[in-house]
Image (tube, helix red, strand yellow):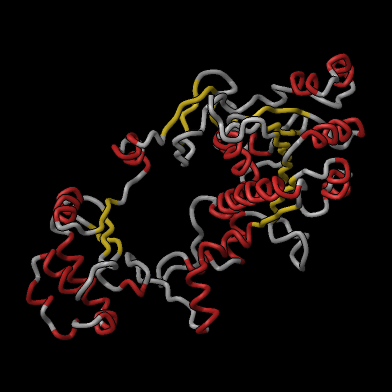
Length: 399
């Protein structure tokens, strides 16, 4: 098995979503990820709803290819076990509230003193310092503070949050990038470093284009009308309702008059020749009336017919797919985007594959999500503590 990160040791003190997104990416490419969990309850996500076979679906989605060590961080010997693992680790990942691990004696300064090569990677809600440092952080809060909730949705909608934890996934992905950058730097310097990102910055980042425009013009981006797209794309791009569903069409990268092009596609040549729509600026002034005419034509035929016709014309388009259609989509199936692993409670678990494709060092599905403490004995034995495992378990240091 040729794994890009084989031999890399990750100590994972994170839970729920953002940290586990990062460490699963590393585990998929061969890193040995030791997940530290509370005895008895484990990662909070183990007990969230919905449940799949007695395990939280969120936990099952984000913890494959990892080993679980159940250890009590409030117990002095539990901390000693984590310190011993940190001395051997290349990377530590955590998403505690700022300052919590410092109070436990497991902060960056303490652990880096014993292991100068350690890359200590943190995710917080809003930053390790500053006025919001001690606030509880959560995805939807970051979406609100970072403008994503205001930016998302149609013109007349209330603030609308993205329906999946985009802040968590962005933060976890960014932290993974930071870790790999820090490991590259360590090859030159021999030293690790502390890196961090937060949920607030992670929702600002995909708004880079709009924020750049605003910061230099002080003109905020306009929310589109319902069913529309980004306002500067004009009336020829966005969501259109067909006879039996919805499709997205965009002419934003077409040359020439976009209105004329759309009218030709829809069989409205007279409308396309109307001088009132001759320029993008004029078309934007009459956005609503153009969208109404376009919508009337799209409603006459089913989605599939429109997609076939538009693709023949080499126009960018796609059907708006629900989950049942996604799961059967031929391109998604061809890409191998759906995988099956073992379930910690027995049986199988269907999930998504790692989205990266690498020709020489592909990702591997080695194991499903771990049972709580499922690798405690194995990991302690690697630390040379096998003789004392029964005693540690009896005194509830580990489980």
